[in-house]
Length: 327
Image (cartoon, rainbow, N blue to C red):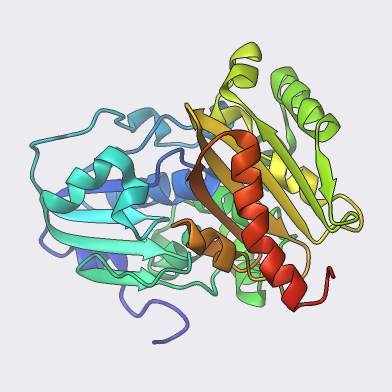
């Protein structure tokens, strides 16, 4: 396999007319950026019937052009000529929108997460890329990318690279960012409004998570969590929790940051970040059916908060001992 896709989106679309686009549940910046970015590109360069089916994005992502056309209802019995599965490569990550896989003649996966599965007819999965938006850019014709499509792609890239801070950022990532900037996007505002800016509620939740965090193994690992009861107290949901794991990761001296929050009764979504390159977090996430990247991975696990933390850290402990980070 080459280090980037060899086919272009317009070639894949071909004669297909009715097209569906979707991504993973609880969409983040890269998922929203890639799905809506692809939607804009197809609407601007074809006469196809295109629809994006994802969960409602967070308020900071709703500024992206095309998000106003997102459909949150699930089309149970609707048939499609072509389905694009963005930023995930497993049907379970689509949630109830996995019906789109079954109801489409041709299915195409575009992703950058480490995954052994290739469930679509065509799979463009490039783990060395910083983001799905980076993979998607390689499949578009640069001269056909509009300013509003560029804004979507740039947003996805800065979210998954931590504004070019994470080690997934490559020379090619920076080149692509430069090409998108040349489209005239207001990149300082995209970064400030979409990545750094937080509501008062988000700052309150972040403060609580930092204050209630725990250090394990003499400061090698930091862990924090939120229960549904605590989220209800702040009248918050998963869309209000962006940036918490990245702030935990900045704790001086730690090797791994872990953040969990309860999505339903005794079911926790887990995010993990590493600060060193030799800790492979996909091994931990994969044990629980999750995935991601070596230094940034996640999964979903059942149990109360302390049981979930114990289960996650038990798997992590094996890796830390093998690497002699703990005795």
